[in-house]
Length: 359
Ligand code: SF4
Image 1 (spheres, rainbow, N blue to C red):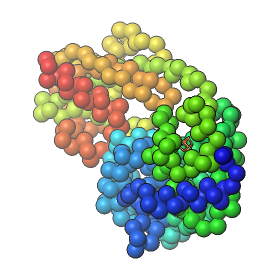
Image 2 (cartoon, rainbow, N blue to C red):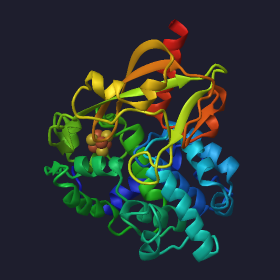
Image 3 (tube, protein in one colour):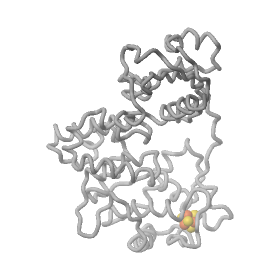
Image 4 (cartoon, rainbow, N blue to C red):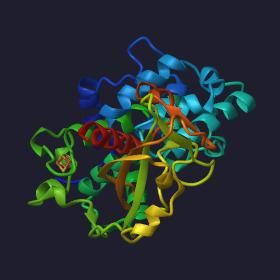
């Protein structure tokens, strides 16, 4: 039996969800009212990030800034520092801008209509739909990665991603058709099914509450859905980072500009990021290299960004006592939690410290 009725599919899924919903900190408990601020915060954090990681950050954010007013009156640097390690930092900057916008223009009350939501910084089609459904129980077709995967399997959708993404999203609306209530629960039930049963590599079809409606279940390999084009190999970029330490153990970091990658975050100074392996002159001509009085040797780290892999040689050395440098700060290691430091820079710091300890 395959997908014939969205109502039966919805009924079976919602029954399962009533019993098996994941206990997530941003979901309301029995006697609580859904807080759109918390729904919005969790949805922004969950973009491209695993639930287990988000839980920790969500708890820190809601403790520091329990309401949208608190977040809007925070300092942007503090928000970036609390976001450090979560990646995709434009989300944090938009989060902060959005909180300020909601306070200034909506007196702290999130709007519930699609067009107003999509005018807010950092809110696109998906997040607007998720907020409308989950925070306001409004009908909305919410399609995240889990829901794409379930749709492609239940309907045995043969389009190839990413090209067929738009079409797959249209197909997902069949699952939502005729949903009369439970507009918030239904997409969350799909998300839970995707996270716990209909996983990408080994779906547990025998435990699946919607098995009777699933076309891919009758194939040998339901995990082959959604069909995906082979991944292109990512390009590689190279740089040298200068981990320079003063005699009191502090090291030098500077703040990146307001535009572009990792904007507004703190970095260890590096050479230019190039497509080819650097030559000696790229390093020796760098003003930070020339500050080093005692060199401790070279380490290396790698980091994967969405669009390229990054290979960084880490050169560690001592400078004269806190040499005056523009645009930066000398920071003690135990204070970096107060700064917005992205994961790639944390790796460089750890590698620099390792080289110094080893020397
Ligand atoms: S039957 Fe299997 S493939 Fe189909 S929705 Fe359930 S877990 Fe996914």
